[in-house]
Length: 558
Image 1 (tube, helix red, strand yellow):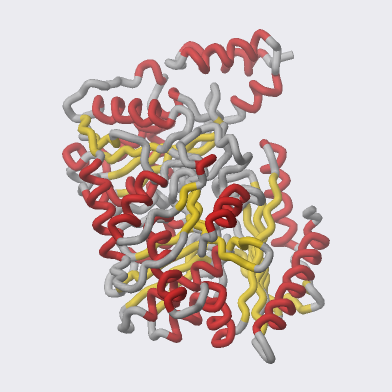
Image 2: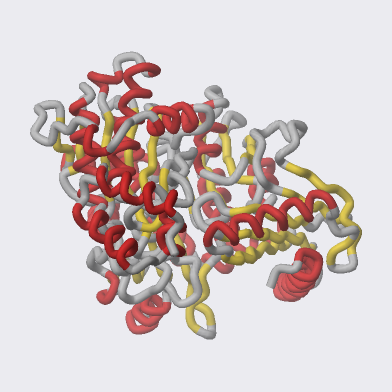
């Protein structure tokens, strides 16, 4: 039986919902007396934070839909006109990917912004997230919007907002926009101007400028002989990556045929995330058939990059930490100067710090999320940003885009691989070189899904248990220090992260994901290299396995 208060809220929402499809969805749930489904859709408004909005498509305030998007655009417009000088003329860049309703949400946002008096630079096609991030700075816009749910499952979509510097918003901007969203009023009363002269299309000109900047960022003049298998995972990366590689003089990668075209249903993978088991199986098969030297994979909006290398047993995907270290070593080795900067996150490997120090460069460690990597660059204007990465396959090469950029990173990986191949070596050899100098830095991640409101409460309770009663030892080694990143003593903004430092330099970090209903555990061990690298790697893997088992036992995670 549906609670009368809930039924009244549903009826009020239907009356103000401009989309007949979501109105019909809610009407059907009312008719079916589906109290559980309606309660989930009306659990509260979809929270607008530093990652913008992200959630499942559907009717109600807890879902991504036309009403929610129009309110978000109205809130953004109000904020910009009040808080950003010249915003009306500078305008807002709007890009979108190929997910369900992405184009509709983008065009509705443009109409709302234009009706509020803002100029709009609207993408004339679906394209990658890094192109939107680049376009904000390239066009001097006051802000940017990218309609995407990145690597989330097919039923999801999202709304990512950029500041005028091309970086994702951070606090307190998110709460200021959220307050304006809350007062936007009924969606049917938000003014629209779809045919406004304030809306201008952007396309080839912006993509061409992006390609020019990417090429300037990776000014590689060495060998180009490398065979590449590539998958966009049914996303929008292909039509920018292929021209980029052609301009750089590389042979065209062999694109995985089954995943080449944009498809919002992602028919060949449940989770279109190159980190997920099985997501790259078709890419590996294509690589095996073509004898590829490397596999490159973007997620659906091409802000992430996965790389796999051949082994005696097929292909192995490099971890985000492995690729981040390889890129940092390759890029820092090609330059000089003590004014250079490399940035990573607190959950990523400490190897980046050692690499930067070895090359006389500075390094910084920030909270998870590329907005913080961009903030580190902004806060250090006297340093030249070389690269940044987070272990979840996000990389930035140079300053031209202030967000993850899986396309420019792919070009840098191809160039690095070609250089190694010309010398009779591989990416695996380069990893072994780093281990001999700095020790084996072995990392792994463990993610556990917690669905719905009950799952969120369970995650919160688990984090509180870790804070209040951390384990005294893990893997037979004393926990020497506990850092709670909610405390004001870390030098970083407050974050729901707990770090356990062991006496043998191992680390464990635990945090809820900011974009998915997951709790994530991160592990790192450092193993000196003695007789050979292989033995050190095997020892490190054994230590990682022990750590994971003990964390599971201590927290109740399974």
